Amino acid sequence: MTEKSRYWRRTMRALAFASPLAIVAAGPAAAESTVTYRSWSPILETTDQMIAATEAKHPDIKIDARIFNYPDYIVDLQTRTASGDMPDIIGLEPGALTQQYREFLMPVQDCAEKTWGPDWKDKFFPVGIDQARLGNPDGDENFYGLPVLTQTINLWYTIPVLEEAGIEPPTNYDELKAAAEKLQGSGVAPMLVGAGDGWLRRDIFMQLIHNVAPGEIYKAEDGDAKFTDAAFVEAMTWWKRLFDDGIIQPGALGLSAYPASMELIEGGRAAMFPMGAWWQQQAARQDAPPLSQGLSGFAPMRFPDVTGTGGPEDLLGGIDVMIGMTKDAKDPDAACTVMTDWIGGAGAQALINTFNDLPAFVGLAPQSYASDNQKEVWRVFTEEWLPTVKYPRQLKSPAVKQALEDALAAVAAGDVTPEDGMAMVQAAAEQ
Image (cartoon, rainbow, N blue to C red):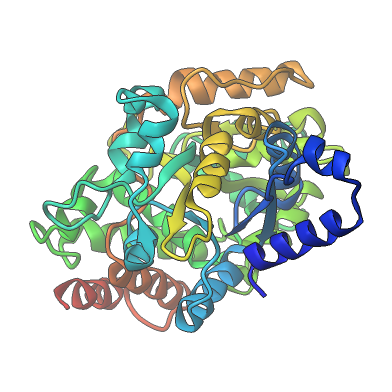
């Protein structure tokens, strides 16, 4: 039975038992729409708060959301596209992920203009608009998703761990290696990495190649350079050295980013770790452990300059998560309402209050801070780092992205050389 049929059946049953006066006074009740959302982000606790805020503002809409770990979400998307059972709105990354599912998505610029007017793009930080169409085919100016959150990628350090060891946050590779040697045998990983997840391996490599040759990886994606060029082999060699020099902990390839590495980090087992602005959300959980409470135990740092020639001033980043509307959306107007409310309305404010990354929509900021450190971290991200972002952390091509993640795992394990690893990526690019 369709939703419309159920509605009329409920209405007719109510009319059968109502008095004539009641029928005239009440009239038919408004139909309720349910909007389904599937994603890996925001985390469940945050999404629940967003749902509560949006449903309170729009009582005629109910939201059915399910949040997965990222690898499980990718499997769920693949399953749903194969079965023709896509949710109404979905979480997306710019570039490869959006392009992989573009045929299942509808353009959303009309929804944006309907909500915010013809100048809707001005409501967003420029980096969000610039990256939203990353990887679109030539001539395709559609927006298949709208940015909800932005970010930078960087390292973090655990404040009491470094203080107890007498270590300053490393700024170059020699200092990074010296810190690892000093921490050896302490039960604390110098750089704790959940390298079982391809996205985190890729994040680290993107920072390495950005240090070695800023902007070169995007040229290679466009065919104006080769992934086998010296700069890429050098970056892959630095990746291998992180393992060989004991900077990344043994067994990293068997550890997931979430929840495994997260639990170790919050347990004080990491001196440093590679996450991004989204790590701030750890402080917003009701059951946050001591290091995460008020974000008191963690501070962000730039990725150390491995080349010794001076690290770049800009950080990689841009869009963290976008929301796209699928062609299967049962009520596009309701889906548009939820999507835009989560970007710039009541749901968005609930989202930003949890420090779940940085806003894509201009004018949003947390309504309160739990500590001075948390407030300072927010300032660093929004005033110093995010404005410097030139390049995205994402790649355009799903094939290149997967090949790079696979090559990074193989090189780290010692199964292939850095040269052969980059040859794997070049082969994917040539296809």
